[in-house]
Length: 430
Image (cartoon, rainbow, N blue to C red; front, side, top):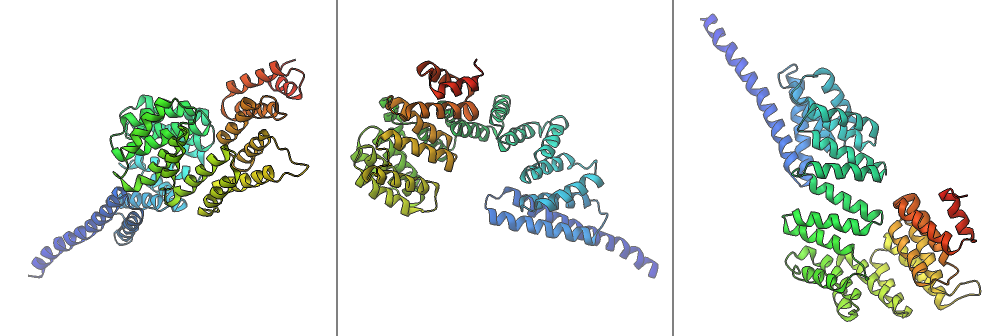
């Protein structure tokens, strides 16, 4: 009788044990998958913490189970998403050492590379990503995409652009292609290559299917336009923006901001101001700044100062507030000059360019101010200085060919000047 009971109990106990640790792994994996899918950051963190908890419990209660490797993988990846990168690295190393042939090996390598990227250990990340390109068809495009981003993080922008262009041209149906096009466009814009940036935004606009995302891209395109744009082009974009008003209320502030900006470019100040004063929230600072800028362009400095003050108060700690402070200081110098102050407008633009460049590291904004000087004030004592500053900035940071072209112009226009001499030295002329 005892023997019979024993024969019944042992399989039953083993069955219950198997059920118990299977349930632990099932729940761990369930929370993990839910964490991967959710877009809510707080909810995702809760899911990953629960996935870790269940996986750790499985490892403690049932060591050497068949799901040991899977549990370790879940813990490591969960730590990556929880931004506990050093812990994640330790666990990826442990997983890859003890389970070198595990079905999740390639996935673990990819996440290990991403973890190194977060820790800014770029060389280690690149080595793993290069290895992945030959190990897995699944991770080939992902590895190529991440390798391109490494060059961006290292500020090697030309190599980044070449690599990301290769990615978007090779993997035309990959979900990350849109992200790649966006990153290229934004980088081009940062480099001051506005026309090229606009082309990539337009390409992205054509393939985007989500209407709300299309509006955001449209706003980015409009941000690449300026007051010298063809009036027919401005009208086209104005109609596009206006038709979306109130369709997505959370986008209204950005829409009013850009509609107002276009009206100002069309010299329809009344309509421009009417739209800009409707802007609320974080975009309001930029809206009031644009109104102040328009009054400044008209030479009505008192009104400009009023709107600059309003803009400044919206967010005194922003980058724009820093620009406003300098602008107000320069305007006050123009209104109340001392003997030492230079009154000509070129002085104002030159000082503003220096603020953008030296204080804010904003190359494209600095170039715009320098260009205003040598295009609009050819006889100013700041003209050559501004052109040389533009040439040097292009040559060293943005577009070497454009820099060479400007240096050549300086040499031709003022061959005996100190700027021509410096230009020759840079171009290695004798």
